[in-house]
Image 1 (cartoon, rainbow, N blue to C red):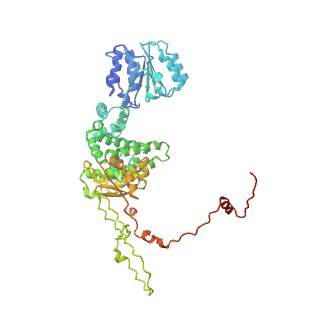
Image 2 (tube, rainbow, N blue to C red):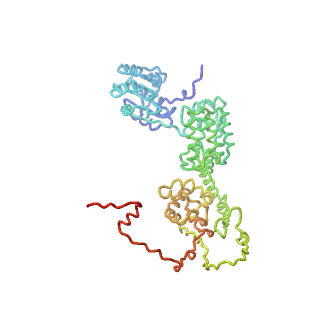
Image 3 (spheres, one colour):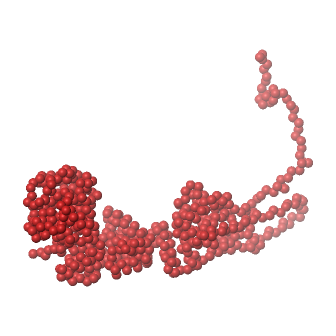
Length: 581
C-alpha cells in the first residue's frame, strides 16, 4: 500500500489548524458561531494556501452534530463522512474540467433536492475556468439560492470571475505564508513524522515552497526521501557576485551549474530575479526581507556592494527576458545574453554603461577608494596656437614666426620704382580672452565621477537630446570642450551665437545637475579661431581708393530737344504723321 503524502496526512481538520490565514479563520468562525453564515463565498489566493481545505472545514462545521465555538468536532458521523469524501451533504466540482453549461445545469437541478444534514454545500474549484454560458447559468442560482444551500467558489485568479458573481459572494482572500511561519511548520511536521533535517535542509525546503504550505510539504517529502540532507541548490550568490565584479564568465558558469542541476532557463531567471529582489529590499526596506537571520546578513552585504540602482536595472533586464522567453526557440540564449549585458559594460547599451560607470565611481569615492584628484584626471595642456593666425596647430607646438616663415629677398630691379604713397600701418586684430564667469557661491563642486569625459558624455547623451525649441536649435552645434576650473566649458562658432546660447545656461546647468546628482557650473565661450579675423585676408585700404578731384572732366553738353524728338530717338526710322484731332 502506497504511503499517504505528507500534505494529505497533515491537512488541517479545524480552523485553528490553518497556518497564516487568521483573518479568514476569524471571519468564518464568527459567522458559524453566530449563525450568520453566508449563502455564497468566494475564496481566492495562490495555490496551496488552504482554499479548498477551508471550504471542507466550513462544510463540516455547518453539518456537525456537536460544533464548539465555530469549530467542528471531527468525531461525529457527519464530520467523518466529509473527511472521507462520502458525504451526501458536500458536492465538489472541478470547474476546470466541468466548465460547460450542461455541467452547471445538472448541478443546479439537484440544488432543490433535500439533504440528510442541515446544509448542502457546493464547492466549485477553479471557478474562473467556467465558460460565459456556464457563469450565466450559475448566476441565477446565486441570486436566489434555497435556504439550505451554501456555495463556496475557489479560484486562483479572482479578476477573471464575472463581476456579477463576485458581487453576490463574500470574498475572502488567502495569502502566502512568510518564511518564519513556514519554517516553524516544517520543523513541527518533521518532528511529528520522525524526519531528521539539517538547518540547510529546512532552509532549502522553505525556499522551494515559495510561501505555499502544500508545496513546502511536498518539498519536505522529497528531502526526507533523500535522507534529510539539503539538495544541491542553485548558486544564486554567484549571479549577484558576477554583476558586482563585472565578470561575464562567472555568470555564464553559474548558468551552466544551474542547468546541470536540472533547472530550465525560466526557473533560473525567476530564482535570480527573486534573489535580486531580496537584495533590493535589503537596501530600501530591510523589514520586508523574508529570510533566515544568517541568510539575511549575506544578502544585505551583497546588496550594499551592488547598489539599489544596479539591482533595479538587473531586475528590469531579467523581467524583460522572462516575457521574451515565451516565444523564444532557446530561452537559455536569452538568459545568457541578458547576464552578459548586466555584467559587461562593453556589451550593454551606451546609456546603461555610462550610468554604471558613474555609480561605480561614486561608490568608490564614498568608500574612499579614489581621491578627487585621480578622479578628475590629468589637467589638459593648453592647445598650441599659431601667433600669425591665432589658430590651433595640429601635430605639435607652434613654432616662432621668425624661425618658421623665411623672409623673402628684396627684388634687385635696377629700374627705380615709382614713388608710392605712404600707407598707414594697420594694427593686427586682437581677440580678448574670455574670462570665466564666477561659479555660484552656494553651488557644490561636481563629484569626481562626473567630471572630464564623463560630464561631457552626460551632456551629449542626456542633456542635449532632451532640449526643446530654441534651446535645441542653439545647442545643436555646441562643442563641449571639457572641464576648466570645475566648470563644463561649451564652445560656439561665434560670439553672437554664444550670447544667445547663454540665455539657456541655467537650464543646461539644471539638467546636468539632475543627471549626475550634484551641482554643475557651465561656462559658455565663443571659438577664438572662428571669432578672430585672419591677418592674411585682403582688406581694402581706404587710402588706395582716394580720388583726385583735379583729374575729373566735365561731360559734353547734350542738346535739349522737344518731347517729340525724344520719342523719335527712341524709335529709329519712325516718322510723324499729322492728323486732325
